[in-house]
Image (cartoon, rainbow, N blue to C red; front, side, top):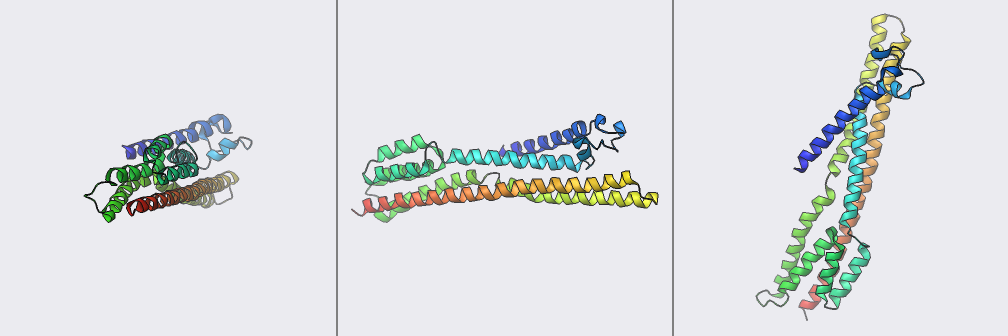
Length: 260
């Protein structure tokens, strides 16, 4: 279902941006030769960019998708951290567990919500169930808690990393499509020279503009996606490290209670 959503979103973005390129940037009123769309009005920037060809529409889609997925990831990471300050939440839970107040720690997890709270809640709930169970030796109790933590982490980590691969892909293909548009524009420019035998300023400028605008579009899309990807991966790594530290503090408390 999620893959279908991404497919529909990407397809819709491409279609809409191609429509923007053709109907808005390519509005005949912005061209000196009207519907032929070969000679843009120098004062009409949209018409000038339109001469970059249909790849401009694809690059607009990549830029839009890069921004859209970046916003989605930032909102998701904010939701994963929960409703309150994660550090204060961790301190509160650790204090409650150290004082043996497991129920209050679980209440704090339910209030906080998010990935961090879900992982800690699974660990606390499982330890509470088996702490006084004589069927589990001390080592088995800790391994059971660790198993519960691992299962919870396996569920939460993919949610944190979701769609990052799409942002990374956008960064790569934006550059490639920009280079493709550059190549096509230069081919058009030299073909115009070869066919006419003389320098046609109009055809030459069309080819060069197609090359340059596609280069610019590809670089803009790549810069946005790369900066976003690096920022988001750093945020995810920091958040996962914070979860690991919280788990370590909690398991140390569990170990101390078992050895009493």
